[in-house]
Length: 217
Image (cartoon, rainbow, N blue to C red; front, side):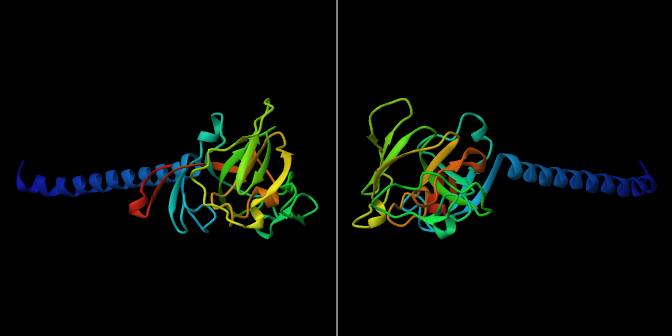
């Protein structure tokens, strides 16, 4: 190849390389958008309600497709949309405050809020439960005995009145009861009721920030 031919070929090679690079970048960007929209998504923990498991500003990754294969399951941490009124601690269609010392909120508003909450699933459809000293006692659907959850992950309630809801309730069909691990400082299903399956975004399965906390959950 003479110098003239090489000079003419070089721009074409550069153009092909630029097109290939642009195609790779576009594909990677499209793949990232697809993964975030349908498969996994990062979230930031906004409050201390999940301490000591998850701290404020900790970053987690959520599996958005796992819920389509039999989930959620009791014990899993999930991201979900709470019912309207949850941020004000209001229960049910009547939007009233739940008073500790009796029964937890047994039914939620039929309207979904746009905010994201992160909590642990402590009971599912048809389960009965009550809360004593922050510990969940669950009578799983189809059984006849209340069993205390294996809750070594929770932060102790102490003398907080919000830790006692001794009157049993039944979780409605298609709903899940959510509670924070920081049982004495968590606005959760005790106050605003169970969450429909369709409002659950996905399961929190890993944390990636801070680096000292990187790992699975």
